[in-house]
Figure 1 (cartoon, rainbow, N blue to C red):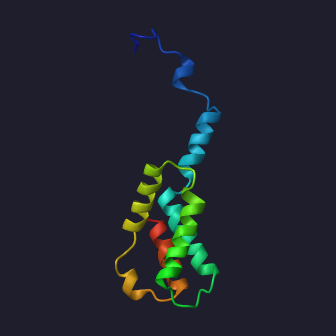
Figure 2: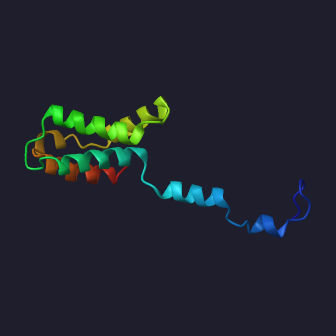
Figure 3: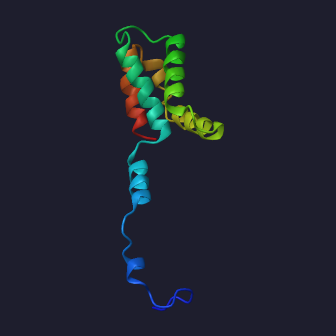
Length: 116
């Protein structure tokens, strides 16, 4: 088929060689989303520090703030806010009534991270 802008199809155009940009893009797309990373980091924090104790509102706030600082710092505010909103939307409302300990929360956050 003839391309009106380039003439005949160029063999290199049909089979482009992967360059460094292509590899970087492939690596970037293989990573979990920012929302998933945010939830996973909060889960790791809760599982590592006093996992058998009940999760308090202050403890949840600290875990989320640490995850936010670690994962979202350096991104534009709109990107960080969107990632945070997606992460919070992934949380099941039943978690607030059924999960008690920090370890239970950690496992549920890890499961939620797999959905975003």
